Image (tube, rainbow, N blue to C red; front, side):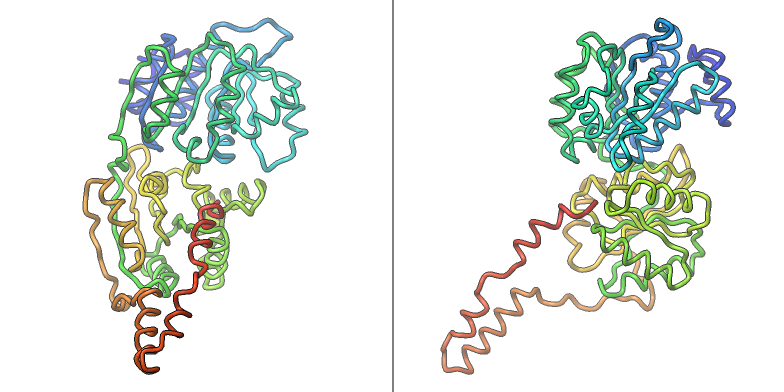
Length: 427
């Protein structure tokens, strides 16, 4: 099956050929004809399956087949994405595939000056790619007109819900025309997504390319047990000894990503970072340097676990395991894309064993564990609470049964407060 069999216009086929593609991916094969037929879509597809072209190509065709009045250019297709990076890349795909067609597009997202976005919207666009928060800003300022939207796309809907965008999405849905085509793409289908889909989609075409909760088939998984204090040293060893030329490394915290990137860079690894403390221009420069090969290692928080369009990325490393198993799927979705092979490596210390177990349950497989010679983890140390209890017990005996030391160690600690704040600083 080739793209020419899907009923696409010559201008689109030419743009696809310009990109070097000849055969559609499975999600494209199913989604394109259904969207062209006007059907609502509920698609479960892992990242890297070609889903962006799967909805971009038919949207371009539908809009071109029914042009609006000259001089008036309202938004006719709205694509919502969870992150700035993904919004920019989806808009780039729209521009690439629509290069031979007279349709305009733009993207609006936070982290950059809103004035240029307002100017672009005033000039008129057919296709708008947006993050929910910044689109809500434009709605509030009345700088965008959504009254003529014919097609709505929720891309990576589960991630948008994870990031707390559901209220903004509902406010946006409330002002859109009731009659429209709705396309929902999601890697996973928690109950919130199923509930959203039930209220949004009318008799949808169901497309499921990969088992929900699965990882890309071409990705191999490896765990290297190691003491936490030696993770950075082991990472540098793996990069150097395996001569990895391009590796994406994930940490949980912003300051951890920045510190690790600087340490690796000082050791000659040519590293940079992407995280929530960097503005959009800094993120864009870091990503471009990584994609061009000027930078060898890109250290990122989960703000970058989706939406990074990097062709043939061979290696993803979990320097720290994520707090939930589904985030692991999203992280490693950066490699093994579109039929390519890739390697997902996780550096796991004693405290992360429970998180590893959750990931293996989601994957429905046991991940091979390989101890790297010279980096053998030591015996598991007692937890701080058990150490305190042992110390208190010894102190009580040495003082003839008095429990003043024991009382001291029972004083409330700060762990609970810090743990409660940790998730708020991961981007």
